[in-house]
Length: 622
Image 1 (cartoon, rainbow, N blue to C red):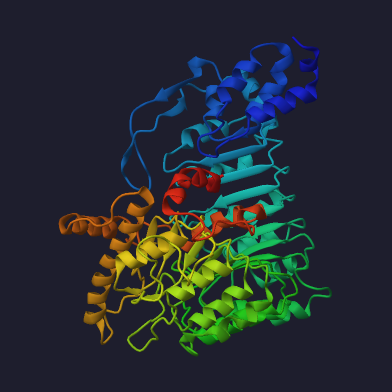
Image 2 (spheres, rainbow, N blue to C red; image 1 turned 30 degrees about the vertical axis):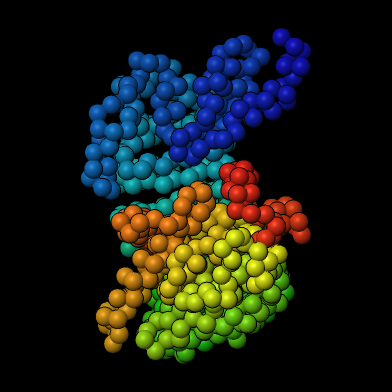
């Protein structure tokens, strides 16, 4: 054996590389290799075992490390707790009480564990947890060197066993008190996490209002943590808000707020600037009033903000949100205003006043100072009125946008009196030209006429968009409740500027007009335009695959049904917000992707585009 392999640091680096690709559900991809290396020779044993046990994805590891006569595999289907549906996953269990020799094996390996994930997905692990809970006194906590714990379970019998894993060494905790529990013992766990784990830096704790006293209990733990960098929870008391406002380390905060929180009083009790390092905020509330008060009193200067509100009907409140964000002196990179359909804290004597129902370019103008913005995702139950010139003005303000979605889920008109979109295909092309990094786009457009934008039959060179850059990133286009008359003409134009486009989401509005005066007419429009956009999507797919687009009526009808059922169904598609999250991870890509040498419409024909399609697709995914 080469003498370099006798150096511990080199071995640790090699085995750490084998441990890459660890999955929190499936475990280590190279676990078998590490196990074999540990048995190869004494020189490899300790380093290989350290790497093998560093990340543990289930309780199975504490069973299978013992002699074969101590455990067995259960192949019988079990009943999932959440769904009452038989599952086929094999589980392991102990066959006898553990002996002192068994405990010595577990005791030898337990200190190696740095990250442990208990995600049961419905099956009951209480038998294993009960046996581990009987460990000798000197083995509490069970994992003395644990740094990260994720505890996501559905079994009522599992949750009380978390105590044996809450080590003083813990720095990161993700724990969810499932809504179906709602028992007093849940509040007891929440209240004592701070005592058991005083060094926490990351605390992502979920609990519902059915956990009686949960907010007060968890707030007791929060005031024990002085080194938090990320805190995500349901609600906090004013005392807990006061404590985290003083922390110089807190950068990320997700919390439920109400106007019952005394933000002015909290601010008056602070002797220094509140939340000095806070840059990422996510707030859940019944409306935007609580966030406006919170951000105003605390003089927040943010980089990334997500607001989720159930009553997001007021356009004036939207403008106030944007104005308070504009008061910050940091350059914002992501703004997401979304509907919250889940449980939100409701203040006492709640009363909501709608002040305006239509957003215009003036609503967005306070944000124009943020030239580094990468995501602007707004989904609210308000009308939206923008023209070609105004959407161009917005695009010029944010040239680095990667995700632009403006009411693509609801559409731009909330009722029969709402405005019709004034953004034409010209406006859409202009946005693509000005924002060359776009990966996700959602705009309601008026595609009823294409006379001035049609490419000539012989090619793609046309005065309107000759020399326009081709966007090879966008694969899903959301057009709200856009009207369309000529599917083939629109499809050819969209394919010319977005050759990677494969999905068009149209008329998937969450907002039903069944109680409006024009309900019947609206339903007819929904069916008519869904089919036309479905046809547009099919033609784009045919162009991308090099297939003929002039098919007979029977085939055309089948294509329309296919498109409507598969691609235009709201339940089948991902939301723009989730796409925005994925985009954020790849937001720092090399600027060479969008350099001045980008492909231009007219600089290559359709054959050239399709020949490089697969290669570019792989490059984009990378």
